[in-house]
View (cartoon, rainbow, N blue to C red):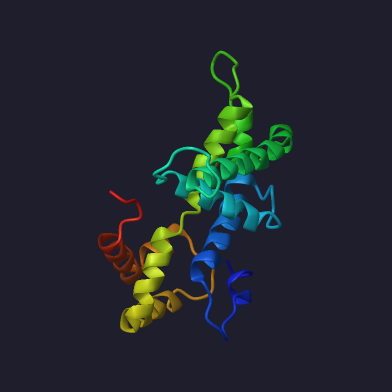
Length: 191
């Protein structure tokens, strides 16, 4: 985050949604995949995730040209190929990331997850990990309520420049309230 956010444009309007999507996918890739995949694929993978998620609300569930469903099916194929490409290195590694752990996990009977199992787990996990609905909604409400934005900023600045741990994050009471209120107004999952 410290390396990425300072590169965001500040002199012109930007689409925060896509900046946040890229950032959260890069973070999820680092955390859950030990950095495998890198940032060169970020845009293509983000588009595939978005298409796959949008397909869930498709009214027409046939892969007809121009439909959400077709885009989702294609997006799913991109994701499957992407994660399949990462499997050999993850299986060979002794990494401590989740992808390596899934590749190396064994049952008491000595069975391993199949490639399809690992791919499906990773698609679901990464989809959830880089969903930006709450972040984007919170950013919107902070932009429309500058007084609360300032309160949250002052509280954050009071923590200093040291890397944050869970205990430090727990002290951000104002931001916690803002996020909870954003979720109350706008749920990330439609009902």
